[in-house]
Image (cartoon, helix red, strand yellow):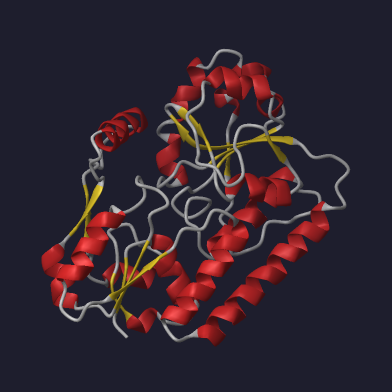
Amino acid sequence: MRIVSLLPSATEILCAMGLEGQLVGVTHECDYPASVRALPKVTKTLIPTTATGGEIDALVRDRLGEQGALYTLDMPVLERLAPDLIVTQALCDVCAVAAEEVRSAACALPGNPKVLNLEPETLDGVLDCIRDVGVATRAEKAAEELVMTLHHRIDAIVALTRLARHSPRVALLEWLDPPFSTGHWNPELVRLAGGMDGLGREREKSVALRWEQVVAWQPEVVLISCCGFTAERTMEEIHVLDRVRGWDSVPAVREGRVYVTDGASYFSRPGPRLVDSLELLAHVIHPELNPLPSWVQTPLRLQEEHR
């Protein structure tokens, strides 16, 4: 089977199931595992690589307000690859090629490739998507083995966090300029990791916030995971916090519990590494109960000058 993945998370699912050898094309954002970077790229982005967080937010709002896509397919490459299966999504217009463009492209391709649309809203939904990929690729056994492994890791975290005496208020943010809550599966991850998310809502989209709302929540832990940014790229935007009124009064700031992590790897990709994200969250919320696993990147802890 010749598979094209239009989602970094789908690429990660396929590789975790042992199907990397069947991948013939991926998106320009697919970077994990590192070996997939050598595969042909079937998408292009309209977002300038030099844009700031505020500029990206404005561009996203303008494009989506005009019903314009942020990514587009490279049809000549897609035609040359002649896939049997295209894996895509319609959950988030910001994150991938528009679903309608994918459907139109599939109809125009020789061989009438199958299109698998993944739209998880919860952690269980992500696991179900792995099973769906297993059915579509005739690799049900590999899918079920992966799901079971991930379930064991989830259960281990939940068992440990039940020992905690306190559920701290958590602010998990996916953007800084302006601040955005996280949505869909991420507030659920906060809950499973033993915290309380008063800014995001389970199974709902992320929403733009005012910094006054973040400060008013008085989070005891802040974790910043800007969607699509590495931790280092996010640090280029961290000066935004310097002008937030009342930031110094936030308990997480006073206690040095403000963290920055790699949003390109964690939280924004609904694939196997969402369980890594849960383990990371559990560590920053309850470090006394949850040592950071060796396979999870250590989050950056903001230094004194940013408190």
